[in-house]
Length: 55
Image (cartoon, rainbow, N blue to C red; front, top):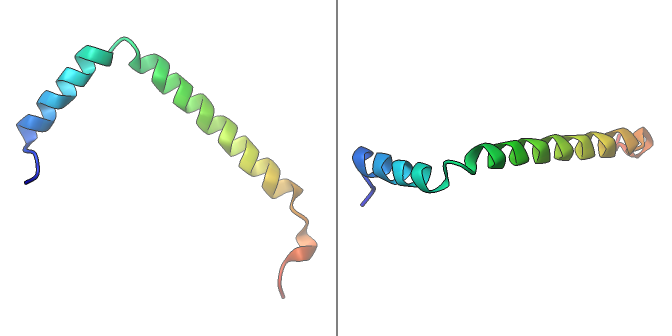
């Protein structure tokens, strides 16, 4: 009961027509969020003391 190739293509076309003008803004926002997340993870890793590693 999986959708076929044409059905997926039709749904993507409808989504593109409905939200096409917002997609670049959404992609930019998603990219900025990912960069901020990576910065936060890096800061946490840098702040972690090396003494707490199990031996």
